[in-house]
Length: 109
Image (cartoon, rainbow, N blue to C red; front, side):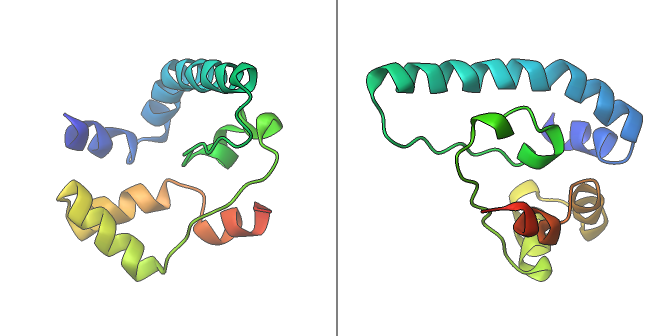
């Protein structure tokens, strides 16, 4: 239940950290395997959709360039509420648990 899990991890930093310790290594190896496969296939460009790229830092050494797709805070809130069928409070909790988009934009190429 995605909504129930989100309610837990986006309101409890320790639970989020615990979940990240389990999931991030698995996600990293899955993406790494995909990158290796594309390297041997001769693919010239691979796009990785990694919302927590800067937070986890595990994939940064493998990224030649980073592009951040951003929007206004209002649109971000509206989109998140619509996607997750969440309340404004739930969506804001999720947004506040992440690195601010402004910081990600600063770090991007």
